[in-house]
Length: 198
Image (tube, rainbow, N blue to C red; front, top):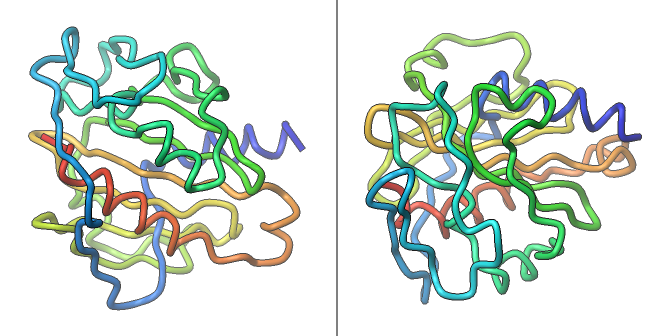
């Protein structure tokens, strides 16, 4: 199962996002607070964010200061059935060389919140590896919702400065086989995180 998840993680980070069914829009969740980092080296983490509170620098990510490690509180992680104690920096992890952020593990799978360089225009044309690929509006940002044909990954990619902020939900193998739709959760998390994206 870990080998499968490694492939899933690799696919997700290489693709940087994933798509769901049509016409999905988001609205900031009541009570969500905003906070952005002033620089990659000195972010101002939200209250209730456990370590690592700052993503390790990555020379391959220079287009945005978005810090996924500083963008999810422990209370939020728990509400999404994730274990706050499982939080790890993506630095040095397999297939994470082009991303900067953190990962949490839960009973249904993993959450990754990270920044990458690139342009959202890479998804303007249909791509065969997605069974759902559509534009989505979360808060004031228009990005992409992408769902892989293998059913394991759904991501929301939003513009952030000159890069991309990504929320990626990877299912465990049992839920993937059951064709569970994790895209509503990806949208919910992206809606919470969006006000914190620079």
